[in-house]
Image 1 (spheres, rainbow, N blue to C red):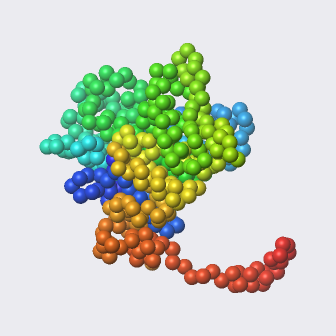
Image 2: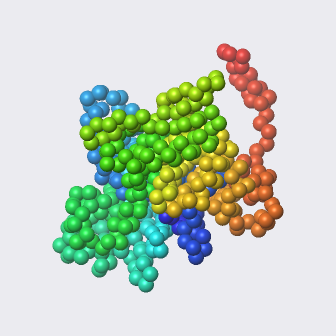
Image 3: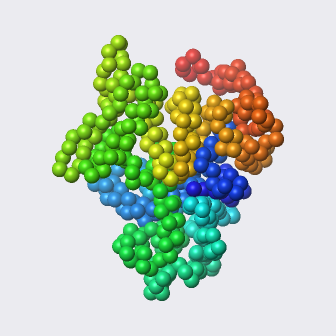
Length: 449
C-alpha cells in the first residue's frame, strides 16, 4: 500500500506531495481524489501507472518486437505503428510524463507499507533513468537496499551488504546493470532475473525482503485511461484468486471454487442493485482439465423473467462488471488504482457500491472521481482535493485538514459552494459573442459558407 507519493517536475506537478497516511496507523485503505477538470487527477494516476509498467519493461520490449512483426505481415501504416508502439516502450512512457519546457529531472518518490514494514522507492529520469533508490525498514533494521546513479556517463550502483547472499550473483547483477540500466530500472532487471531463474535459486541468493517489495508492486492493479497513444484502458496486476474476466473465459477445473465465489458475489450485488435482475449465474461447460464459463442474468422484462447473455447488457452495466472485478482485489490485500471510476455510472449507484465495501477493504483503493454524493457519508479522512492557484501551483490536502468542517456540516454542500476549492468557477459563456465571431468570418452558422 502507498503511504505517500512525491512528484517533482512530473507532468503538471512541479513539487507536490500526496500524503496518504493515517497518522501512526500507516497507510489509509481508501482514498478518493477530487478536483476540477485539468487539475491533475489523471496525472497522479499516471505516476502509479508508470511505476507499475516500469517493472515489466522487458516484457514490454518483447511486445514491441511482436507488434513490429505483425505490422510487417499486415503492412500497417507507419503512423499507426508508431502510435501503438508508443505504449510498449518504457522510455516513451517516461518522456510523456516529463513536465513540458522543463530542463530539470523528473523525480517520483513512492512511500509504501507491507504489513508493519515501510520504506520508499525513488525514481528519477530525463531522457533515460538517472537515479534509483530503495530504502526499507523492518522494525529495528533499516537502511538502503540499493542506490544507483549515473555521472559523466558512468553508472554507480551501491548495494546493502545483505542484499546478495552469493558474491557471484552480485557480480552477475552488476554486469546486467551495466548492460541495461538507464533504459530499464533495477527493479525491472530483478523482475527479469526472477522470471528467468527458478524459485529456489532466487531464495538461495537474494534477500527475501527485496522480492516481498517487488511482489507488492506487481500486484497493483491500475485502471487508467491512456490518452497519449491508444485511448484504451490499461490493466496491470491481478490477484491469483480473481478471474481474468468476469464475463466469460476459461479456468482450470481445479480452481472452480474461484468461479463459485465470483458467481456468488455478482449475484448478491446485481440482484440488490437492480430491481429487474432476479438472478446471475455462470453457464459452465466442462472439459478434461478446464471449464469454459459465460455470465448470464435472469431479468424481469415485460412481466416475464427472461435469460440474457450478459454481453447484451448496457455499456454502463458492463462497466460496473469491470469495476467489480478490479475492486475484488482490495479484499485480497491488493492495491487498486482506478481513474475516473464514475465514468458512465449513475452517481447514486457508485456511491452505494463504494460505501458497501469500504469497511471490508484489506488492501488499498485509490480512485479519482467527480461523484460528490459520497462526501455525505464517507470519512473525510479519505477525501483529498487538488487545488490550483493562479500561478498553476498545485496543492493536495485531505478534507480533514480544513478547519471549517464540523460534525454538523455537510461536506458535499461545502465543497459545491467552493469553500475548499477544487471546483471550476467560470463566468457564464457568452454565446452571442461566439456567433458574432463566426458571422464576422463569413461563416453561415445555419449550415454552410
